[in-house]
Image (cartoon, rainbow, N blue to C red; front, side, top):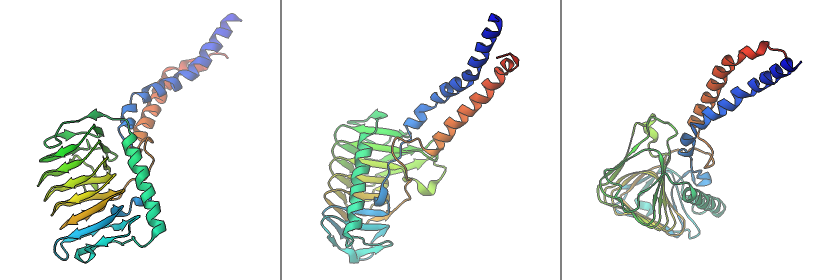
Amino acid sequence: MIQNSLAGALHAASKQIPLVLSFAVAGLFSPLNAAAQEVNLGTANPFAVLAGSAITVAGAVNTTTINGNIGSYPTPTVTGLGNVVLNGVNETGDAGLMLNAKNDLITAYNTAAGLARTATLTGTDLGSLTLTPGVYFFASSAQLTGQLTLNDLGNPDAVFVFQIGSTLTTASASSVVTINDPSPTTAGMSVFWQVTSSATLGTGTDFEGNVLALTSITDNGGSTVDGRLLAQNGAVSLDDTTINILPAEVGSAGVPDSGSTLLTLGASCAALFAFGRRFSLFDGMPA
């Protein structure tokens, strides 16, 4: 009787072991999830340029190209639009749409600012660095002189977030370059620059990512941006600028991206399979 009860207890426990071990194995992959938190732009997603007080465009006619929508809210001012090749829509006149986009920009900004940091780079020039996906924090201003390399590590869901406590400034002819991206046509799609003050792009900067600035954004001339220039309260000033909007993944920050989710699920299934076979010898024991 005692022997049968002991065998039954062992049999019941064995049913739970694979499940517990599978979660333990999956937990080994949790750092991948933590590093892959997308920032949802919501209705601000279609905007290549979004300003608070004005959009101003300098330079010669047709030397600024914007591939995406533009808008300014609450101050509906756009000057120099005749200098722009706009492959999108000027939404400035639609107050309701602009209000929604601005609110979603504020949410995205706050989300990016609140993510747990991977590393602190305060006082470090971004030029000549090679970074892997993660959240990088500057307590004050951030400077880019030369080339910053973002290594996606072959992960289609790689995300980079830069939290900058003051200004972002790039020197002339600086660049942001993505490597090991399985989808090179979308490089910069999941790169977010959360700037607590204003961002300034030096002449001829080749930039990647979505700039979410609390105040203003200025291009000193001739820069190319694969991403978005989104300013909450101030102006966005362009001069012979080219902006190529990129698709943005829709999802809430803190939710594992699809690649990491599949990896974790795969790990769990593998553990269930392996340990399930190992403990199947209990199946023949009486309950």
